[in-house]
Length: 303
Image (cartoon, rainbow, N blue to C red; front, side, top):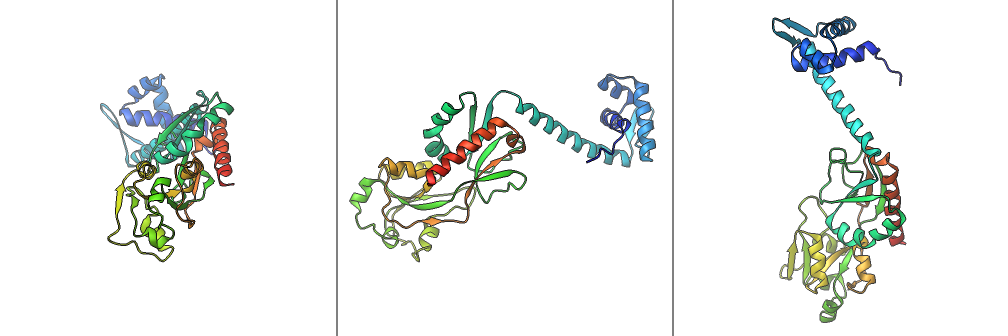
């Protein structure tokens, strides 16, 4: 795209913003470390180019006209975007720290047990992990990468498929030994179910999962409710009931024999999880190294 601005226009806009913000050509000159006549000249040139008066000259300073106030608002927005871009570019060259936002459960049960493998491959990269169960503003929070459900609003960002959302019942081997009749969805509906009270976004719950198989949970069934999925899993591990297990999280626990699947039925939703990169993140080589590793790990799990 061809730059339509003349150098004098850009110089004038900078001087204009300083004068409008300080209310004085003199104070604007001091802020910009130039002379007061230089500011006055820049304003005359800018007003001539635009064909409109930007200031009303007062005895003790200047005050923007209606056109000046509008221009100040728009220039302020532009300077904010420029400042953000400068900060993002600066972070691309400051060390090897990469910031990843991920849910508490995924960080605890999926990421932490395998992060040593990433450190072996990339010992120079420092991982900063932010645990959150809501979608953050990646640009504002200066986050390079985030693992999120597909329903998140990330149209401005690049994203890669992470895992499908596959969900099935899990419990401890001891719990299953004490409840051998749990062999089908109908039996589960009358058992002790561990519920997740989702606070921030709708997720597949027991009612929705059982409904996929034409089953309505019995009103008299026992159950416990928690507002953190890590606690739900801990309760399942301790034999307190049957939990819904997200495959990418519970697969290692099943492989270790700490959890089992009482029935084979499974539900895969239309809300896969994605790995999302901010604009600054996708421009950083270190962040892309982490992205490639995360995708490779998730792909290997699903194989």
